[in-house]
Length: 104
Image (cartoon, rainbow, N blue to C red; front, side, top):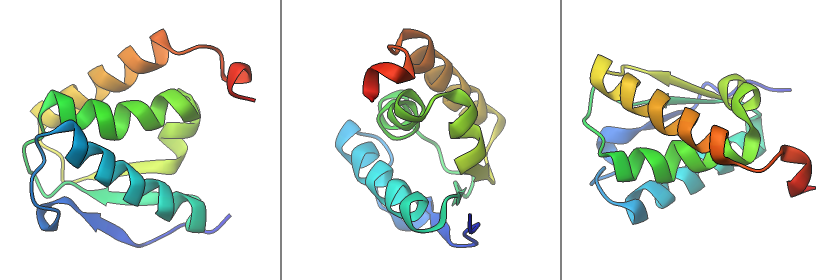
């Protein structure tokens, strides 16, 4: 598996507040994962809303499972508040998701 050094720079993405913006970011992340196996996401110390974080990171974690999410999505330049928010939405999504075998 190749590891991507490609950074998705969130400060260049425009808004980081809505579910639709989170879905757009999720699509970009999934494209990089599909091509490279791992993505490095540079948050650039930007603020994210719970809606954006859930739609972007929570949905990926729900479909990949927690361990695969942690292997495939690497976050850098994250403020402590955003780190806590992302952890919260990821854990909440993973805990409420059906078993991964249900996706097969």
